[in-house]
Image (cartoon, rainbow, N blue to C red; front, top):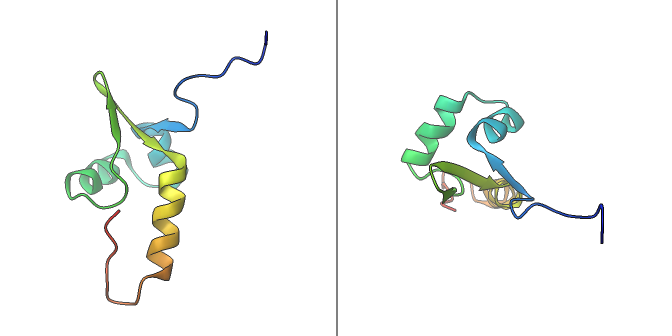
Length: 73
C-alpha cells in the first residue's frame, strides 16, 4: 500500500478552494454559508470544508427545481 495513501480529507475543499472552483469571491461563499444557501460545510478545528460532491448534488437539484422555487440543501 505504499505510495497509495489518501488523505482523510480527500474530496473536501477549503473555503478558498471552493470559492475558486465556483468562480466566486470567498466573501460571497461566506455570505451563502450564513444564509444557509447551498450545502453546509463541515467544521474541522478552526477550518470549514465543503464536500465537492455536495456542490454537484446541490446544482443538480437547483437545475431540476421548478422555476421560482429555491432548493435548500
